[in-house]
Image 1: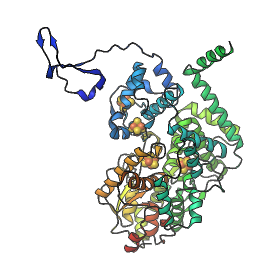
Image 2 (image 1 turned 180 degrees about the vertical axis):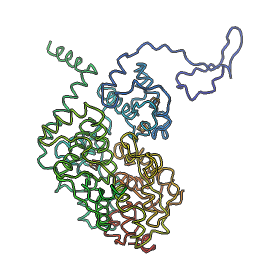
Image 3 (image 1 turned 90 degrees about the vertical axis):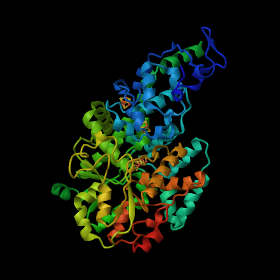
Image 4 (image 1 turned 60 degrees about the vertical axis):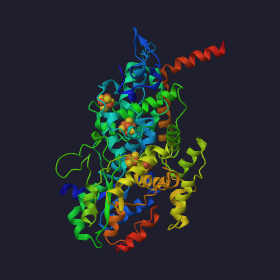
Length: 255
Length: 311
Ligand code: SF4
Ligand code: SF4
Ligand code: SF4
Ligand code: SF4
């Protein structure tokens, strides 16, 4: 049969034969394209559980595959491969290797919550995207995304001082991700700001290194937060069987 | 209506981190508009960051705690019952914390534990009501009140009103929205449109009011953000707008930054003016452009405003 919806099938799964004779009938040309037969055997049965153990993934089991999330998705509109409904399906089926094909774009969810707004089952797909992106990183399938680096730089600063000072966050983020601060568009932006702005005010707005704002008497809140985060991290490691892995590795190294 | 009118006259003001940095002009214009309208803003004492999206990504319950601390200070240390946040991020997070504390006992437990360790009273749900700067002006002064006070009409200015994501989504944290006549709509918000129309402006039909600018990845995935912003800017222009009015420092700087980035990196020049709604209202109330920080904006609207007798 000719395949009309070729765009729905991954190109590597399509086989076209130049010359093909089946049961004595020449089916070359129009009738010679087939979909490769696939047998999926490497299910990760724990996949759904692992993702629901991470913050945001809690409600993945509610999904009934209506597709409203993908249909409303901001990122899907600019990249058709970005498909929350499909990924939720793969996770629930345990099809880890299929999911891994898209591992480098899942973190690109912009958290606009259009999906959460549209979802009839309160899955909170936005949360599932975050949980999945974190799962990929925690399991070592992807390096930390720039977005995770940004979250970490930001959170470290909030824990340390109670507040954010934007330019400091930006500088630290660029440093951590090895990017130059002097990108041409940034230079242009500052140039335009300078048109009407006294330099003193500009430095107060953007470069407030000297008067880094902080919340006073913050230290007990800071240590309480850090303690809680560490605790959660340990719990999640267990859920992802990472702690077991670490144990085994340590014993192995000791032996 | 009248109950809110009195209640919102004096509110605890939570500017948030962005208003001390890139959102400086929004901070300034909000305070100036409050002054011009005779409304009382008392800044939340020794406030902390609400956690924004970044802390939520690291751990949602920490974000709930951070937001709850702000509300706890307002309620327990200042005896206030309304917190007004002009930043969509802050507004959203305080609302979200209220919702989580009410509906998720695990969140409530974590917040209690952290509050005790940090040495302050645990916030109890219902102690404060969180509102946006739009609610604040709309309930206290309202459209009719504004009309009476307008000194320089915004007539002849065509505006696309941009609300972004966090002001309306997800729906469940805003129980007061979509609640019948007079309430805000989550699919087609109109509070900013209504206020600017009362000040004489002409609002264009703008379908991307609640589209996302990609603010979450403004620096970590800049090309995506630039694409999303470009779409918003071009659509506003096609709809006939001279100005995009904003009500959030993050949305505002997102549009400003990526307008330049689109020009520099993608070779796409739109040149639309981006102004905070409080800057527009302030000028309509007779304040000078400088007073409401128009010169702090990146997109240049000074000449345009002068031509129309503003500033
Ligand atoms: S909208 Fe909700 S129920 Fe529908 S596919 Fe997406 S997650 Fe599943
Ligand atoms: S939150 Fe993420 S997944 Fe959901 S619609 Fe927005 S970009 Fe798509
Ligand atoms: S949302 Fe932004 S402005 Fe508001 S407190 Fe958090 S970081 Fe600061
Ligand atoms: S529009 Fe952009 S800045 Fe505004 S709330 Fe959405 S993502 Fe954040």
